Amino acid sequence: MSTKIFVILFATTALVLLTVVMFFPQSETQADEFTEQDLARWQEEFMSVVNKGRELWVSPDLGTNGVACAQCHPNAANTHPETYPKFQQQLGKVIALRDMINWCLINPLEGKKLALDDPRMVAIEAYVTYERRGVPLEPGKH
Ligand code: HEC
Image (cartoon, rainbow, N blue to C red):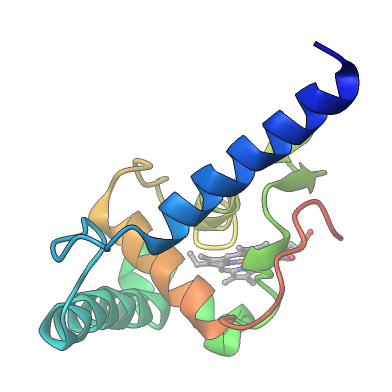
């Protein structure tokens, strides 16, 4: 078979396959289909965790010296979640946002670090990233 015929056959087959895929009737029950109710519920669940994070943010109870995150980072200012993971001098390696949250818990707040799967850690992360929503991701940036 000459190369030319092979190319024509290949192109035709590709075209036919593409047409079949494009016009194949979409199934009614796609896995990623969701309702307005689903969206409302997910938003509500998410915002309840963000609000828990906000409560922790302004609370002196996370540490031992009466200091709250909000005193140095009002409305999560200067937390730059969009730049993580990145190299941090204090820890001498590339770390995740949660590691820096723990660093501030131990140092300025003189508290104990949170387990990475502690619901309070998730809430703080949710709050910090929610405050910076819309900011483009720039991992590694200082
Ligand atoms: C006494 C002031 C102070 C308090 C209180 C404080 N921080 Fe910080 N925070 C800092 C300083 C200083 C840095 C270091 C900035 C750097 O070197 O990038 C920092 C950095 C951070 C960063 C990384 C910022 C970046 O640009 O990469 C995060 C995230 C953060 N803090 C979260 C918290 C959280 C969560 C709390 C409460 C548990 C908290 N901070 C409380 C002073 C504070």
